[in-house]
Picture 1: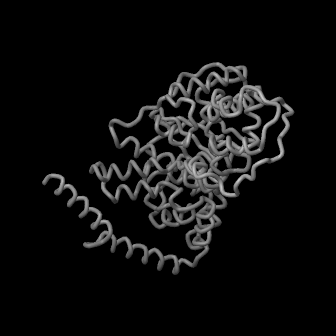
Picture 2 (picture 1 turned 135 degrees about the vertical axis):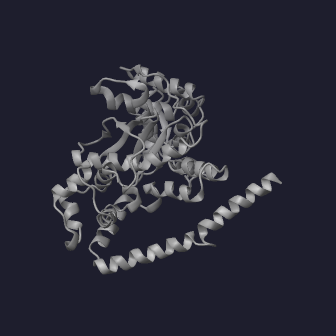
Amino acid sequence: MSHLRIRQARMASGLSLQQVVERLPRERRITRAALHKYETGASAPAPSMVRELAVIYGVPASRLLQTPRLEIAWQSPRAGRAIGARVLDSLRARACAQAEPRLLVERLFPERLSPVLPRVVEVRTPAQAEAAAERLRAYWRLGHAPLLSLTRAIEGHGGVVVALAEAPTGFECMVGTADGGEPVFVVRGDGGAELQRMALACALARCVMRVPAAAARTLETRFAMALLVPADAARADLGARRRRVSFEELVLLHDRYGLSVPLCTRRAVDLGILPSRAVLMRSTVAYPMRPPADASLVRDAERPHERMRTLLLRAVAEGVIGPVEAEAYLQGDITTSGSHQSASRATSMRSRTPSAKRQRVLERDAQRLTHEHAPGGRLEILEAFEERDAQEGED
């Protein structure tokens, strides 16, 4: 039994102690003080109470029995408005719940990627922010080509990216450091790939720059735009100096670099390519309603869970873990079961279901799991395929 898991699950659900108590069935209702003791380890809940809490929190009951296997130290989030303490606790707990299985999967391999980031530098001017972005590109050997996936670049250098399905209003990004030194980047998962890429780039700025608090937003944004659209690449596309620009040119930049049209315009102004009051030419070419084929590569490339699934397939194929354990890792990843709020609503409805009906549902699920583990079941078939492949490899 892990009291830390019980507390983490409640914070991730965004519920207070009183709200959890009110969602318990009347016949199992406890006090807030009793629930608080469960979360501090002063007492342990009965198995039946663990099941009830798991239903309310929308997690497998087995998860509440596991001890957390890593810790993450979080920085303050980047947000457009203040975030309350309870909302922030929920945000961090949800991010930790998603980051933990991904980090544990990374650690299955002895040759796993070590975090690779340049040392932190002092930045006080936009020019220094530009230089810091160029330095990171050089450190990662990215050149000046468009980044099809910033997520893949981060995870290919030892970081972990978490995209929350529904984040608090105003939240943009957050950075943490796991106990193994891995940087953890948290962004919104419901704002589109362009906002996600920009937020990830701003989060990277927090890892490689130390800036004055008063100028943090300006310098982090400048770093992000310089990372996504290098100065030399922008000048090669638009020229060294212009008075006017067509909308089609900006759209092409948007498609190539995954940055919104307004930010592409701002980037050109920051670099002195366009004056601050540039004239936007009337469209001379009808831009197609459907974007070019390569445009979707940038928009669809930010998939934070892609590397985890790839590593799990490799771990099962190499015999590092079995199919059952691989499924357990996926169950810990909230993104595999839909949005957090949808799960909360569903579990809230289940908590109001009569206990007799809930018991029938639990018995049905137990029978399904028994069938999967039975001879000829799905899990045994997977293990049989694994054994057959191993035998063929020996032959």
